Amino acid sequence: MTRADRPFTRITVHHDGMSAFTSTSEEDAARRLESIRQAHLGRRPEPFGDIGYHYLIDPAGRVWQGRPTAWQGAHVSRQNPGNLGICMLGNFNQQAPNGAQMAALNHFVAEQMHRYNVAARNVYTHQELMPTACPGRSLQRYMVDARRPGGAIAMA
Image 1 (cartoon, rainbow, N blue to C red):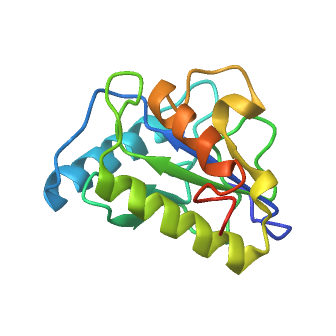
Image 2 (image 1 turned 30 degrees about the vertical axis):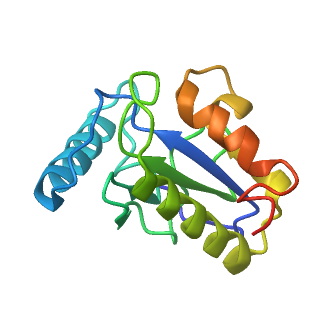
């Protein structure tokens, strides 16, 4: 893993892209996070060294610490320096995020924007930085709207 050598200037939103996930159980969410962590540790040709995202948000709206922010994330190939990674648990090509998850995303992204002085124009989704289906159709649509004037992220 690489130490973070610069302040965060961007935020990138992801989905985990596994199966649909709607459980609000803390135990189920912990198992899901560990599954993601194990997948990242086993990644080939180059394992990530830990979970690649800095934070993850479960369907109950809980925000989980992933990779400590002292370490560079591993969530957008070749674009990780200065990039805070936030992952929503679920597959948003198969489901839509629920209200608790969206409220937590709005609040948490706004907090991080203020903490690191990141403008709304520097809040991205994974597919806006490289070719991928992440963060899924429903979350992508939401993020586009949230950054428009008057949207939840634009007003943060």
